[in-house]
Length: 436
Ligand code: C6P
Image 1 (cartoon, protein in one colour):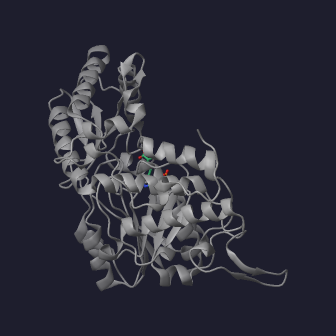
Image 2 (cartoon, rainbow, N blue to C red):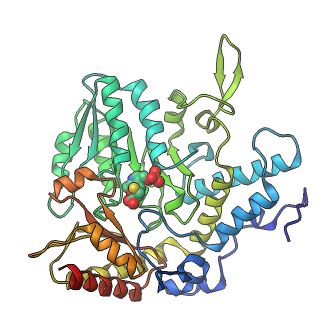
Image 3 (cartoon, helix red, strand yellow):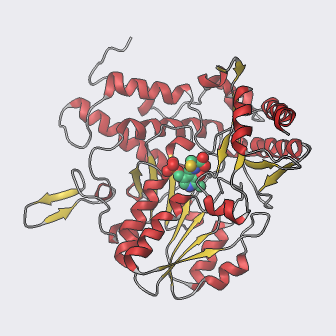
């Protein structure tokens, strides 16, 4: 029953987050403790149980998030920051509570430092457009790594085209580890912005971004943005300890809804930046002669936002915190080691990305006398119910660096199991049997 009772606040958003289920508080963590919370994981594909190993693309959603979205649209939907009526004020409260949950989740100093965006992509574009275009010029350099996702390359290329700044690359070795000596060498008074991926979606490399920020502080005054798209679902995050100036991530890779993302920014920087977009909500007053802007965070959030998405992301964060990211990370580490060992045993399979510190991602190619194209691998795996991503993973320069057109990529989340890794390996054996 979904009768709307205005004024009667659903308990879930106002009470402190309850554990997702009593099972999840048991230690040590195992995937079976949370799998029942994800309805899609018990479905079938081509008559086979779904083995979902494309978590770097997007994670599956748990009942708590699905129910939060359902409740929002059936009982709570109204536009926010606009209405004096109860429903609008309640929706506003829920949305702003979600912002505070995110603040606590990443340990930001102030909830005004949390900007809702559409995605990691939009978060990077916001900083590139607003900070990049207004502050950078000819002779300035922007530093990124050689393993960035396109969304942390192209916005900076656009800034370079518009301002005359130059894009510089921190190279990596054949394992997919950054060359940190080169990084230090590249840092100079010309460096005016640094944008680094924390966990590579194509190689699985964990970059030592805290140390890289520390070194940057010694050598330049350049702000540092961290692309945390892949990090947030796997490890705890403390933006103050990290000392990042900006941090970008997407809700949908953190068990939350699509279409909602976050940009964290230090307040002083966000305050000093011109607005990214103009429109409703981001203004304080408008006349045809002059417009003054709203305070943070609203200055950076023009127009009606993804209200349900923000509230749904809050529910996803409640869920993850009720389990504990440290416990999930320990389990995932063990699973990644198991998967690495099992895949390494497959004849003619080469793992692309063997960095010292890795998480979640296993990219591979099948070589030998008859190399098999990753798309063919993906198609046959799909027939076995195994979902992996194939292609360049929005990292074409990484493919060029490793002189390959594409990889097949399995990426794990906390709900994956060793049995699913075995199913992946069995399905790869079928690929080799058919096409090898
Ligand atoms: N990577 C993948 O399959 P969006 O699309 O804005 O939510 O996230 C962009 C993005 C930025 N940085 C990194 C490191 C990423 O992995 C991604 C998204 C997905 O690998 C989709 S291309």
